[in-house]
Length: 280
Ligand code: FE2
Image (cartoon, rainbow, N blue to C red; front, side):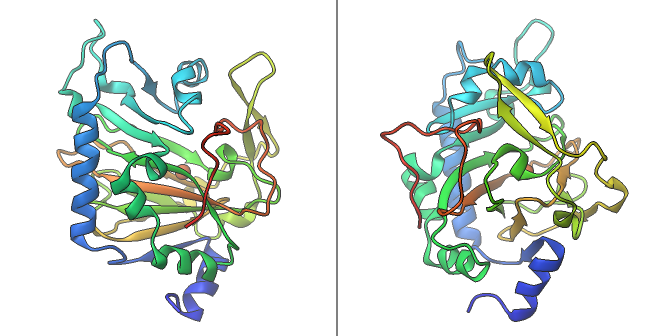
């Protein structure tokens, strides 16, 4: 057993778990080095794709994003650009994230993501033969790292029944100053507020189930050290504030989906036939 009975019941009641020192500092550094190397090799010419939850129109129209489910693609911070379209900081300091199939396409990310420890962990949290659905390398850049507004991951990765587990690895210390995660303890019991669904006319739209806003006064910060794994229930409301500090806050996230649930084709993330999902 990796988790104690207390941790398992805590996850059930709170919707999240904090596992300090889950991965070694060396493993974090290896992934960090690889993430940075990918950015160095990336040629941004012709690809100006701004990722921002506040600018839905940009994002909705962005085929680059919608086609990234089985690729390795690069997304800029919304605040990365000067009015003339040039970058304020270096390319390395301008990328918001890399997504969304790092775990299948890159050997270093693959070996970080497919471990016996994670397989055991997911089964202890009652996911039977989960599949690795999505991976992201999130930079949360110094000074310009953007806010991620309060959301539930199941809004973006919708399944019937809800069967999504988010794994969030701190590759550096995450603090209030550099934009750590904030969660609403027990908020996974509020039900799913909305889902992001492919629209008939192309692009995406939100389907609202519950107009009540998230009780954001109940958000608590999760300040965690490098090597910590945060586990989030797919329904747990969470957010992160902008990073205005001089320190980056690199994280790697992996989303697991139960193999028995229905994953509608109307989700944004689609895989080509040649790249089916696989497990640990
Ligand atoms: Fe999320």
